[in-house]
Image (cartoon, rainbow, N blue to C red):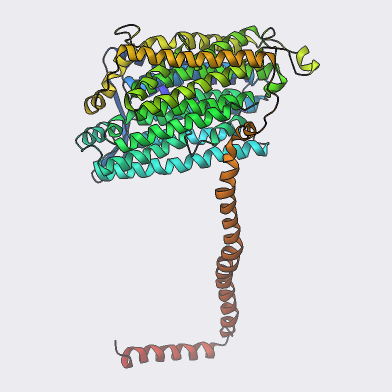
Length: 631
């Protein structure tokens, strides 16, 4: 099995090619079968690889030499260890459920577009698998760019809508900013380490002093790449706009794949970050700021998908806090639990939108509990999980990050708890407004309300179960000694960092107190929101609420200080430089050649005597040049 690693990304690639090339000929049921089946096969192989890794085997497979220049060698090679095997399971497992869900959710699409959609999904999963399987930063970067391309294709899937196309372009361009930082970091690694292979880079980095300038610079540039892909300040505004894509796409981008790429990259590079304390501080502060900013915006959103989008940005902030304080296992743990409950919430939102005939404003919903029983209970489980209420999965992973924050800086912990309370508030505001109270839509919408088909509800049920029990693989020692299976499993990946960093031990009594405070805060916020919004709907925003509803006017600020000046600069260069200088120069050369040709044509008279005379004159000129002009 260890020589069949290449099959994991190969099957999604085959699915992409089949659906993409034959999209005009395939019926919808076959397109869905090819697209979903390819991911299912990859999931099965990933499970088998996980079992081998769990038994102590680290798999390395080199397919061919990709780049060989002088002493630099970059193989096209895969590496499956504890970290990548976890991500393989998340990407293919949750990805398969999203593909299965899509077969029902996208049934209204015509067959060619249906096949095109599944081709894009398969290519997306292929790129993400390439990203986490690569054994060096160059292969990771190829997958990184592939994910960016696929996000553009999927967000702009309904390309006849200009606003969707603009959202797709926004995602693509903002990711390019971060990708530039990633690319410069790779060149810097080649200069410093002479290699991009993980084993070489990390072993050489481990010998460098703490705070080395090269390590700080490289890690900051890598973090710039992560801020783009994982939507952190200031490159986060593309992610909420990505809601323009179909709801399953939102689940795929926001839960299990693209946005977790930055987390994976930093967790993979943990040795370098541990040796760069300045960068770790920057990561933690940016993560906290993003978590709080996005949470405040989510408090006053009325689009069901926008609430979840800003929730994703906020939860990603928590993951970066974990990375910044050295709680690498906690950050990866939260990636996993977040994949479960956020995919559940997005797919649950899609089920609601499906039942409401594409209505997304929660002010026009309400009372859906009795009409959508399965969607209701699974969505509620997702809300409890993301709020960090035990014994659901979000409690365990968020608690581990908050404990790590406490051990480094108490202020980090306080801000993190405030963010957790806001998370509970906006999620139960969303739940109560959508499912409780009276129905506020049109009579026509109410007449057609019904539970979604099995292809939609089965993924919801599976994800709800995972959201409930998924955190039990990381039970903290204070609750059950030696029960943190994920920490033991990932120990080899973070072993060097654990050696290098100063251990911060928290007393069990202190840890219990921290848990109690965070859970109590989340419960109080959830209960108040439940009571408040189940009785009276929050219909409009006033005062400061208007600022939050308009997302702190950050998009407008970016538009004013960046987009408009760039457009104005482009127009200036188009009018003054392009037309008045470049066009004049190019056209002038053409006119000069044309004029010269018209004048020289008079020399072609057709008279042999004239040609003989010109030949003699030419010989005389060469004679003069040869004998009378000194060199």
